[in-house]
Image (cartoon, rainbow, N blue to C red; front, top):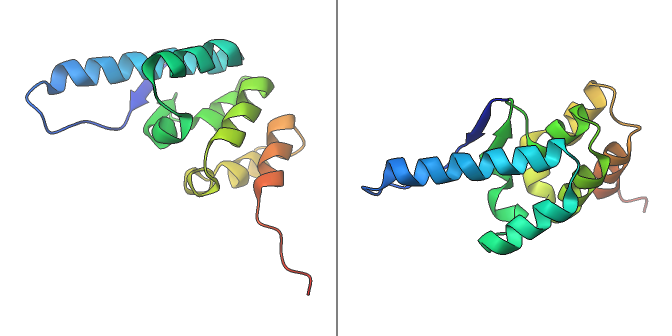
Length: 123
């Protein structure tokens, strides 16, 4: 499984920080793959971070966490992530469009993404 965390500080301890970041990304990707929302939430509490703060930085096999959840049929954790991340971050990752293009629009996660889409005004 190829895991990346796309942030890095401009500090002398870059190598140590990068290792910790990659380790966190690996753990998050594993919890998504295993559809383990409880362990993901516990790890976030332990690290004192919010999904919204790391979502755009983590890639699992080149996919966003939501896309990876869709690929691995991890509907519980994927729905949790969709609810936890600002719509702008989901839009920037192209998650909704990707789900539709790849046949995941009718899944639980696809529906959660659809529910978060802005509704057109009918006035």
